[in-house]
Length: 176
Ligand code: NI
Image (cartoon, rainbow, N blue to C red; front, side, top):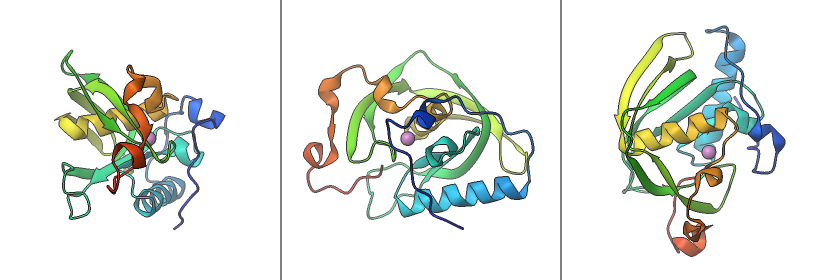
């Protein structure tokens, strides 16, 4: 389909709360998800939310396959998640580095719940219900935040660990 331009932080559309998807299995939804997939792949993202390509709907995709370019990432299955509901399964938070296609070239340490459950639907309306931890939990919290108009820098508690990727991790190829 098409690689779409990704909106950058500062664009008011990234701050809006996304609307629920009411109809599944539609041509429009299939196209949206294909565009999101193509955009995420082209830009080496671990995930993408529909508002990042200017579509204010509760649709996120994410997924990471371990490969030689990113030997240190944990596998996360490719997932299309619509109308998600996220619940922490612990009070415990973990800090780790995050990046975002809407905040290109930067990294920050972000606290996230270490274990969460999430419910939602795939593009056909089939229900999804998972308990996850580690990087999977981090990615889904980051993507679902986009649907509430929240970008990861808004979650940073210590701005001494926020900076340019090329300075923080010189010579390393990292996913956004
Ligand atoms: Ni993001």
